[in-house]
Length: 226
Image 1 (cartoon, rainbow, N blue to C red):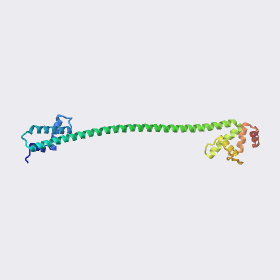
Image 2 (cartoon, one colour):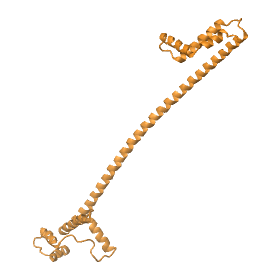
Image 3 (cartoon, rainbow, N blue to C red):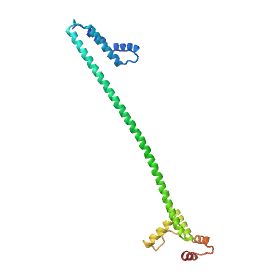
Image 4 (cartoon, one colour):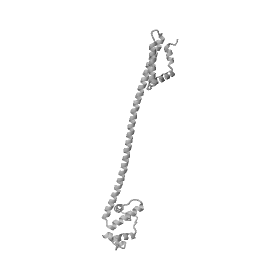
């Protein structure tokens, strides 16, 4: 079959020719894209064919012309479909990115709230500990106020010495409570704690209240009788 004008025209539309065509078009229209240039080139070629195909063309040329029209239509549809798909994907990506941004902001907010809660819990725990210690001190002070001066002083020193010895806080109320429970419940007949105050110190403490005291016997008389 001899080459028809249409066949020759198709053969001439090489890649290099399209590049040259696009370059020339770009000089006149700087904003034009390759896709737009391709569409325009196809349109121009189809117009050329329409202008040159007449009733004298043989059936093979007409069939080739029809085939090119169908191919062009198919390419246009595919191009449109791809553009629509790209638009859809871009829209989905934008929506997903916005959702990610929202989630990230929520995570930052939650982390800040959690940090604040931890600080509040730590501060409240500290306050509870301080209040507990204060309550213990107040209880001890109240009990000491109810005791006779010598007994209160001796009990305070005993608690301080025991705290230093056992390396933990022992309040006067602890000494009294433990002694009372062991006396009433466990029926202890022996001493409950190690005795940490010397006899000479007992006398010195007593003399701060009554300088005339010179013996343990006198101290017992004061504590028991008064």
